[in-house]
Image (cartoon, helix red, strand yellow):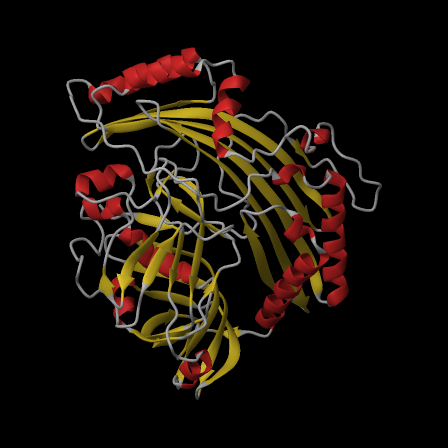
Length: 531
């Protein structure tokens, strides 16, 4: 059965987290930015005193057990008994805080704070998985979960898989970003951002912005006493502008983020640069002409256009699709699948990046996995289940949205390495084509590799020069085929600014993408003007 994956990269969405238990939530509380803004009831909860930083991941154990008066030894016994006879499994404990401040049309439209907590218990027997979860952290709830997952291992007497390798590596700090700045200061920043944008150009008609952050504490427990903890901050700033001239209106967006404190994103320099870039895109689109249609050369810009690589190729290299032989790349290890010079990496070890993790959600340290090297398929992205069934080692790519979901193979930061060409020379080599700089949404069929992506900033290439911006361009192609049509790779590899959220099997997780400027010699472009 074909797997259809939709790109979930809405620039105004924040973290792709599913909320389960709202302890504090306040919406539409601020009617006008011109008034003296006071924090809504409960906003004092955002203080650093209320949410202390956890500087040592091993304290995650104490965070869960002391907080809920659980006896660790008793929980370990329950876990050992629940997974007896299984091939693999774990107890995943999670506590997460998240906030979102949304500004739109001159006022604060949304201000939300959310706390969720819970556990997920997984038992694996052969390729079958039993999974139970609850938002209640108690011995009684754990006991009920143990009874539920027991069905999957009934009659099975497996040999439990070895524990993941240990690590003391920390790729990001543990401080909680939610307590860094007062609520009223964040609102004042959004108000200043709005005023700055409208002051730049009289054609600005609407300003939207979001500030978002989360702080996730996890602990993964396994039979025998092995346990791994991680504390994961995540922040993001997004800006979207609508400009108009007469009856015509166009939009521009820009966002940035990472596993860092808020401080970088609250500086005047950062948010003004975000506004400047969103305005530049919007004004470019205001001058755009109908996109050409037909088969033509396409030059993809560096950075965020790597989302096409992520969706059209990266998903097809995840272990579950290849174990089940439903990927266009199944059975092709060691074979040429891309043009020479094309090397694709998935690297979850880049410090402070949105897609990075010190350990994945099974407790395996993340790594740098070579997927395609000089055009040759070298490997797949593996969680523990699929790695065991395929006779390979896990790559640290077992990820889950939250405690309510079982882990599956997912990308972290996926990108193409730089080549040797100058980007200007690549554009000069194209007589008639399209230069795609920024993408919006898209979708891919994993089985066939077919993809469709919408360009939000693109230009005609005429006579080796970047010409008029175009509107309504879509890229239509086949991932495996497109890889063989890469004619040139530039030396300007960039990672995206930290905005990616990837959707798969109903789960959203933060990811990173990237690539250098590259030429696809022939690709179908959908547009409204004949080429």
